[in-house]
Length: 67
Image 1 (cartoon, rainbow, N blue to C red):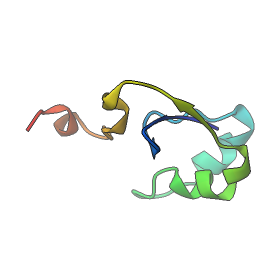
Image 2 (image 1 turned 45 degrees about the vertical axis):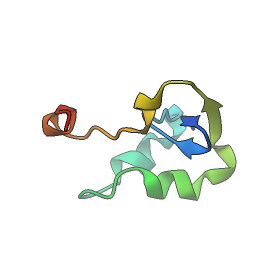
Image 3 (image 1 turned 60 degrees about the vertical axis):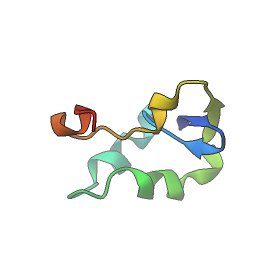
């Protein structure tokens, strides 16, 4: 599992290894992949980046609208 981070805050998108596909496919509703990240936390690798955009979670087209 690889995730970008900026100033200590984990961002998006998160990349998952293929062997975690079944765990991701078992997710239901709006749970997101947080439970998979927590279950496999020792495998999480954070990659420090300069882009503040990684802190914005985009799940729907409406999330793209700047406020």
